[in-house]
Length: 344
Image: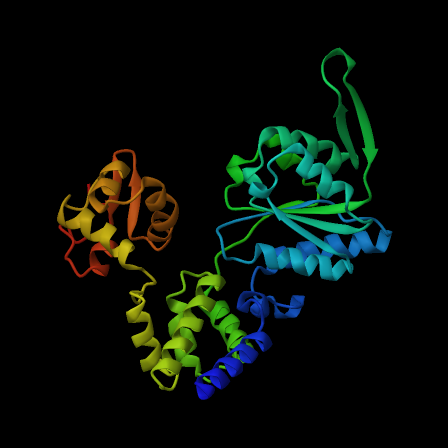
């Protein structure tokens, strides 16, 4: 019992010494460590340098693109570049006008306000945000009915950085107020992902080789967050099985996670198999695919489909989803026509 208690104490001490979040530990601390997105970094560098040169607050910035590409990290780097406090929140967390008013009135001069998933703000809250972004004031309605009056509060200078994965859901008036720029984050190349993994490996104190990192990079869906996730799981697999983290161990770990050479998971492969084996390659409607897999339509459309289309395994047509020749090859089935065109 005493030995077990000692082990528990050691485990507790180890946990307390470890970082609260591995994701935070892996986040780049400066611009040099942020790999990729060179065009966006250069635009932001000019925006921030010019603003600091004029001793002005930088204008508001909107970042959009698929999840896991580094939008939150850019917000942290911008605040660090300005030497400002970063106040973070998210669209779903701002449920009432009073929530937004509380956040804005508690800002200090020069603060950076980061709102993640800003497309989930409701229209009423958006309208309160317009004058705050454009004129630096907050309009508050006091009272109701004929006796109601509007009080205007002046806000300290601040920079709003907003991030979204669904820019089409933002209203045009809100999008137009991001005068500092609207930037779309692009997917990463395998070489960039491998560089990110090399840095992550050093932080996590993982001993591995370039071949193993390239293997993980090729299956990461061109997304740093996914790459770091796969690296951590491969490390766990190697430690538990007391193996060296080499290419063989990496392949075994990814096989256990059901991630194939193209980065597809089991659901991705099930979609291709369903389309080919039951529907002759398509075209097939989304509802039919969802019913055939007992999966939600939104999950297939927003989680699985984008990557399958990105790497050219399926195509959308007016009549439904269609498997390409490359899609047939991926699941080891010969295409009926043997061409690179759509199977119609």
